[in-house]
Length: 529
Image (cartoon, rainbow, N blue to C red; front, top):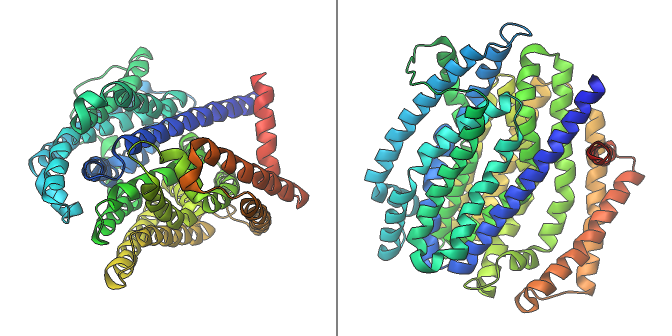
């Protein structure tokens, strides 16, 4: 039975990773099409500002709080009778929670539409009048995304807790396809206003993609508003701590956009958005695959398993994420200009825009491993019901980001890319706080042996970077003159040897995490056969 469970887990993770990679690739294509159609123009600045606000507000107030509060309580209801499953109680709790989220997000949605001008003033007060007016108009169209996102996130929690990981993993791909379809067939007719509507429709499609399999599985929605229910109150009681723990990334995006505008160039707003999107896709593909699969398992082990099992799972997820991120960090840092040119440089997005995005992207990149630490350890602390720790780390990082951005941009008068550096340094501060707390609170997750392995990975990364730098100096290709094919071939010619050196060095140093990862890939291929 244990072997079968392991094979099933390997298969599930493999399929989730494939779905996540597909979603991220389509998300990247969506960003590419936005750049090629609108570049870093005033329309792009208005759209970047307007589209960022509803999702950031949702992430700040509801995003992680929904999954962080809902999933542990839902899982406890499924397990409350030992091996028996009480679906009636869990479904009742789901309906109460779902209705509450719809009510609250509906109020925020109405307020956001009414006070759209005030919100734009708060986030990007230095926009030109025409750009400001357009941003406010687009925001009115997109603010209902908050309601659809709240409903969708609740259903994600239900499906993942019931063991259905694939549908939640693929919903972003479905959503991105809707927007991509708009760019390909309708953008020339309806323009930037139609794009805002397409984003809203894509979230409605995402919700339907989640709701249909849930209804088919036997779930029945009911209008329950018993907000005195014990399970609901239990979930609500820890919500503010979980909410605070999710604040860093959305606040960092808003802070970055605001200070980019303060640097004196409206074009730096979409440039920061493109750079941040590229960074999130690069850093998040593996990290989110691991986190989304492991969080329900971590919650269960925290409630019913041993501390040793929990620590082993948490440590494995943490160090595996960092092990895979390091060579990509080196490659993207060395090939930043060419990689940005491959993704974005076409249509309205020219060499100057590519250079602007690349500069910001390079300053954000050092935060990649700290991004992984933040995402993995936050979920570990949520599962252990230690929500105050990621909350404190997140608040500290937000304060650091704002202060550093203010010093770099306003006090020292440095260019927009230093908002990216403030973002990266704040990720380090957040990860450092979480790591110290993990050593204390999750004993066995971070051990001396694993730290020795990590040092081996750093040495392998250094060797990999040296090889990539050497190859780049020998066959350098100008990002501005090379074109798509030349930049793509150049990136592959530099990165693939570097990745090979990284894996070879890790194997020679008998680094256990890389060996374990390759063994997992081999097992995955065997299971599929």
